[in-house]
Every structure is written in C-alpha cells, then in structure tokens.
Amino acid sequence: MIRAVRIAILIVTVFVITTGYCLFNLRYFSRNLGWDEVYYSAWVDQWDDVPVYYPHHLIFTPTSVWFQNQFTEHTGITNTTFIQKFKNTLFVSAGLGVFFLLFYARSKRYWLSLTIVVLIAFSGSLWHDATAHETAAIPGILINLAVLVLLFYRKVPYPLPVIVIVALLQSVAILLHQAYFLSIPSFFAIFLLSVHGRDRGFRLLRNIGRSAVYLLLVALVTGGTYYYIGFVRMGLRMEDNPEGAQTVPYFESIPLRGNFVRFFYLIRYRERWGGVAEDPLRHAINGYGSSFVTSFRTDRIDTELLLPEDPPVSNIVLVVIGCVLASYFVFLVPVYRRYGPTFPALLVWMALGSIFVYWWEPWYIEHWLYITVLTWVLLFVVLDSLLSRVRFRLPRAAFSVAVGAVLLSFGALMYSQNFTNTIIPTMRRGAPASVSSFVWDERYFMDEIYREEWEGP
View (cartoon, rainbow, N blue to C red):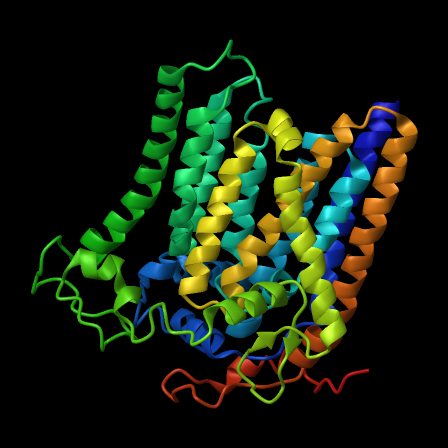
C-alpha cells in the first residue's frame, strides 16, 4: 500500500512538472524573434527547395522539419515560428519530468530531487530557450540526461544497457550541437575507470572492453550520420571534389570545394571563430552568471541577455554560484566515495566546456546552457552524498532544511528576476533589423496564434 502511494505521488509530481511548466510557458510565450531564430525558421520553410545541412547543428533543421510536418498534419497550425518554439517547450518540459524521476531513483530523496528540478527549470538560459527557436535547449537536456544515466552505472545489475543509453543520448546531442564532442573524453574515462557494482575489484581489460563498446556506438551513430549526409547526400569526399557540393546554402562565402573536412569544420571558416572577445574573463563571468539570472536588454531587439544591472542581484548570483562551485572541491572525498570517478570526470568535462566557451563566445548564454544545467546536476550529486553520510536524524533534518531554504530562496530570486526582466519583455513582438529580406517573412510574428500585443501587467 505504501509503495503504491509513493508511486502515485511520483506520477502526479512528474505530471505537474511537465504539464505545469509547458502550460505556464505557453501562457507567457516568447514573441521576440532573435536573429538566429529567423534564419532557423527560414531553413525549415525553404527545406524542400534549399535543404540546409549545417554541420555545427547537423540534424537540427531536418528534425525541425519532421516535427513541423507532423505537428501541422495533426493540428492544422502552420506558423513555423510557433511550432518550432513549442517544440523546445514540449521537449524541455518532458525533460524536466524525466530529470525528477532519475534524481529520485538515484537518491530516494523527494524534496532534494524536486528542489534541483525547480532550480534547473527557472535558470535563465534554459527558461529563455524553452520558448525560443534556438539550438541549445534540446541537446543540453539530452547530454545532461546522459549524465544522470551515468550516475546509475555503478548500481545497476548489468552495465551494457547504461553504456548503450548513454552513447545514444550523447550521439544525438552531438548531432544537434557539435560542441558536445568535448564530452567524449570524460564519458570514456568514466567507463574506463569505474568499478561496476557486480565487479570484484578493478579489472583494466574488462573496462577497456566496455569503453570500446561505448566509443564504437558513438562512432557508428555520429560518424554514420555525418558520412551519410556528407558523402551520400552532398557528394563530398576527403579531398577536393568538383562533383560534390561546393557550398552550404546561406554560407556561400565559405567554399567547400566538395571536401568533407572543410564541411565538418565549416564553422571554423566563418569570420568570427573564437578569441574575439576584448575582455574574455569579464564576458565569461557575465555569460555564465546571466545563464542563471538574465536581463533582456530592450535597447537591442535581437536577443541579448546579460546579468541584471542591479548590483546586489548580480552579486548574490555570483556569490551563490561561487559557493556551489566551491562545494564540488570541498566535498570531493565524500562524493568520490559514493559516486567514484564519475564525479571528477564530469568536473573535467565541465572545465573543458567552460574553457571552450571562454575562448569561443563567452558572452552568449546559449553556449552556457548545458553547463548551467550540469552545475545543478553536480550540486545534486554533492548534496546526495552529504545526506547519505549524516547518520543521525536531527542533524540530517537541520542540514536539509538549511540547504533547502538557501536553494529555494535562490530559486525564488531566479524566478522573479527572470520572469520580470526576461520572460515578460520577450513576450512583446519584435524582430531584428539586420536580417536579410531573403529570409524574412511576416508570418514569423505568430499573429494568428497570439493575436493581441502584450503590454505587460
């Protein structure tokens, strides 16, 4: 009876998280159109005539086209912008529900799991991209789902299902956003160095075999997809080939010369590729900080999200996140005892990803999105490890209440600031002025979906 009640509570919680977040975002749906959003919508609309395989987000447009066709067929709605924004809303909402289930399954701590999900849901970068036609939200959710599955590796009866699930989630994330190739070394290290629950001690050869299976799966899925699109669909070769595709639509200034290597590294040949920030440390602090609490700058209609201009709020954000990051190292020993090499390997990936964003475009919160979610996932690992070591009920309760109060207070701050300074402003209709008329379409304004201008409360 007790188990049935517990299962019912979990089901209801997942339903409330998923449907509540989805409906709330539909009510306060972003009507702003960023520069990239217009181009991504045009790529979907013009797919039949001009298919765009952009290697940095290889399957982003093809999957968007598939979703659009299915959604239009079953609902009759044809507005590209709304459908693609709703795709992100739906996926993020469902992802949060799965996050809660996996948090609870690993820790058996209801309130800890719910608190971390709330912090993830209302972090500025994810909340903004949940109603934007952008590329970061879905792969960011997928790669962190792979992280959560990795947390079970030492506990499940058989390692192979975890290896397969992680490899598939990571591969799809990579195909949606090329930057997630950086996660491969850390995931490989976890399979190579971890002692599985059924193993009797560390055995290198057995772990090498498991790691090889993981690498093979990732190589088959990602490599096979790049091969099919590059070599089969576009006629590319490993050397210059006059019979293959010479350019990618919308990137005609970058000659491919039928060369797959140039296609794979296409973003490298753009005019802006890393090392362009005049003060990268300041931009990185602002970018990472504003991925938690954002402020939409209305003096520039193209999406520019920065830390609030209110110094106390910005300082609170940086202090709290600084304490969260410090806890990873202060409590590294108890966390290692519970989770093994998984935790330090994930810290290495977080560091690699942060260094890459620091060099690439440190001011852009989309690039910090998966690191923001990972920040909260790793905090869950730390708190779960600490709570499992507090033996007496009273100290455990006091610790839980104190930490919970701090985190929920910070969650309330994120909610209030992001709702006021980002969600409400982006509900106002607006579009960037710099987009070419070749891709612009008045229908992108979603007027048949949201007919009235939103003037705010």
